Length: 144
Image 1: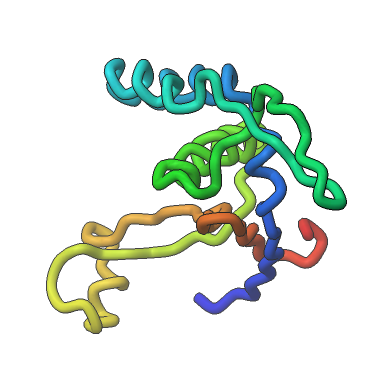
Image 2 (image 1 turned 135 degrees about the vertical axis):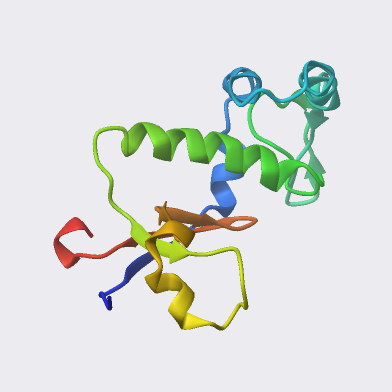
């Protein structure tokens, strides 16, 4: 079945700096990240300080208490966890998104396999998260 696809692209680059770290640690536990991992990751940010330069004058160091480091290998994964939680909460009572039929057996390009109901599973894709971007998908212009 063919349907329209409406996608909104969102640039989340500055959103990395707004992540509440205490909330992130709780989300990691909610997603059942290994306990050892949830104890190690917060230690990476404990005691983090920064400075800024204004017209050649360097500020005093101050504590950084929010956000995830964009240069950290884990940053995009950590941000995706928090953003996914927000989207799950937003979509709690609705099921917008794109329904995709897929099959996992036989040949990849065999279109007949998608007609056999016992071999097909359906998934709804609400969003596609990238490093610092998000694509929100819907099938009706009104939901945009």
